[in-house]
Length: 128
Image 1 (cartoon, rainbow, N blue to C red):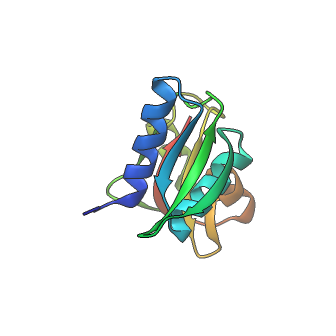
Image 2: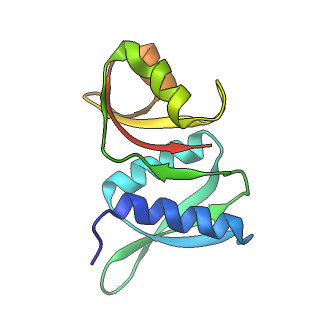
């Protein structure tokens, strides 16, 4: 029984990267798909495709070896649009190195997109 599917997905990806695999299989849902899309957009992973199993669906993710660390942020801290720099300093190793993924009223965004759209939200994960 899974309690936090996003934590499981990021853990699977991080562990597969560390041992040098070129692909991994992760559980699928709509939130995971949006997170994988953001990771692909920022070139942390390659392509991914949906694989329909008999019990449930999975994503086959192509890894390109660019992830140093990725993890969920718990608890899901709320943040205002002017607090993004504070959280970047806390979770990312350097300025403009890596991305924070947050959920906003405008959808799932990175901190760069949230700054452009002048919106706040709740922190979900980080990748660098």
